[in-house]
Length: 396
Image (tube, rainbow, N blue to C red; front, side):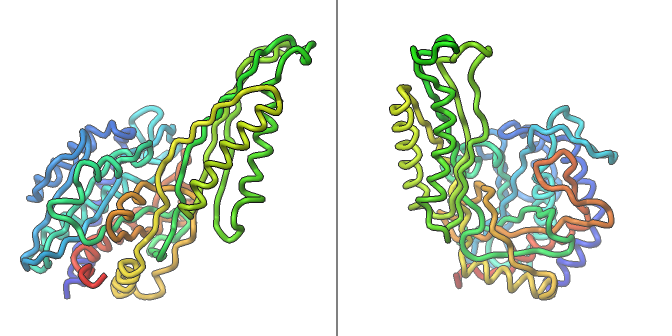
């Protein structure tokens, strides 16, 4: 059976997947600067005989043609950028680039997709149709590499009938994977607010408006957007994360800047909230004798997994692993630009367990000590290959 062949091949080449992951981990690059990573991917694909093309400056797209010709096309996607974090692990493959680290597991995602490419190429004579491999830059930075890839036609020629991607989960034990139908991650918008007033002497506040006091009232009032306007059964978060203004103890400044994030899982509520935020900011500023400008940078949409595609993927995973190793993904208010793909074609974004408490591999993503149990690599590679080769997208 192809399933067992893939599983055995993935396990037999575990040492290779580890070497690939460690190379990528040692040489992280920030969003849209993944030039060496892209070259490494191209070299690897060329070595295993997989045709590829480039998209944007640092993206790579490859095609594997199956031996059984049909119009079936499934896309598999991995992101490849790192984060501006200084690594504090002590293993021998820590980041060699100061201040940059693969703290979100994109080195793992890229490794799994490269490994899947090798597996799929090896068994291509048994595969139906085409598998499109998408190595995408810039997931961590607005506007998101996915949006640029879609703009540049990555979902065309050929057009996939579905797209799948995995993401590490440091809360899920190694050996397990998880799926969830419907909305699984939130949208993410950036909020920038500037409050202005004349400013003046702190001993004479009656002669000016106070942007510090105004900003403080805005922060408190904005919580009403969530507590008194949102449906309590619809997850949403509004956080003001920075306030900057002032230079001395005796000067009322003329300007205070704030920034934060707004997250939602319902598109109608998302944009209604934007209107409420702008209204609250403007009216409080006016009431305080100040002025305020609000800029909302519309970011990634919520990630919504196609029900039929996700159910099919889950059933195939259960065949591959056994039911006890497949769980349901928890809802998260984090965001992912995979949401752009899932708005265009059926998508399935699933989680790969990487936690091992016995090895003290317990730290969360976006932290300086994040790491994975590398036993997850063979599972991630095999699962991506198995889904790419076997999921019947024509029935979605």
